[in-house]
Amino acid sequence: MASTIASSNRPSQACTHGFIKASCSHCNLKGLCLPIAMDIDDIERVDHLIQRGRPLHAGDHLYKAGEPFRSIYAVRSGSIKTYMIDEDGIEQVTGFYLPGEVLGFDGIGTHKHGCNVVALETSSVCEIPFERLEDLAAQIPSLQHHVFQLMSKQIESDHQMMLTLSKKNAESRIATLLLSLSRRFARRNLSARAMRLPMSRMDMGNFLGITIETVSRTLSRLQKDEIISVDGREIVIKDPERLDALCHQLQ
Image 1: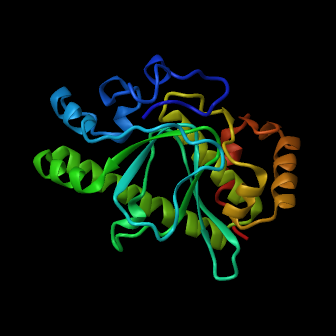
Image 2: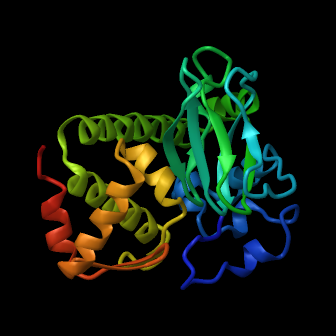
């Protein structure tokens, strides 16, 4: 469950020995996927549930909307995009997932996945069969509580994004996304200021509800104001306080 998309960092040895041989006990991001206080025996019990297949390449789907729900997934390396197709056949990006983050909860209620999941780059995931996870979580209270926490955080994140899209201007939307990515990189002990965006400008605009031209103009304006520096997908946050202030601007 560990790796990074930041170009200035290198994957840990535990993640580069092979996708099949990786284990939770040696993963340097297990604190994001599993309860921190979990003992080694319980971690090994979880590890026995996990299925680790071959990596996904850019454009490969992990699952599609309407497919039966059987598992949740923890991103081990690379980056993942979720999206939906509306009644007019138009794609709407709904989220981005980085190493250590868990997805797939959308299928629990209906037993079918509600969105499409595609790799943005070469990525790997840990597949966790949900029925077996439920059985084990009933035996390990800390694991059950952690699963509930992950679901709660996803709901909270969705609500925050709805607020961002409904009330904020383009600068505020982009600032909110950049700071969200910054915090998520920091949780993986990566740089909170220098990062590589996992998504294209088009995906960023689709997700934030603005045009690709507006994304490019806004990033250029933030660079001119010396709040960030931009080199393709490489972003350096030069003034996090001013970027944070932009997050609170309304339309």
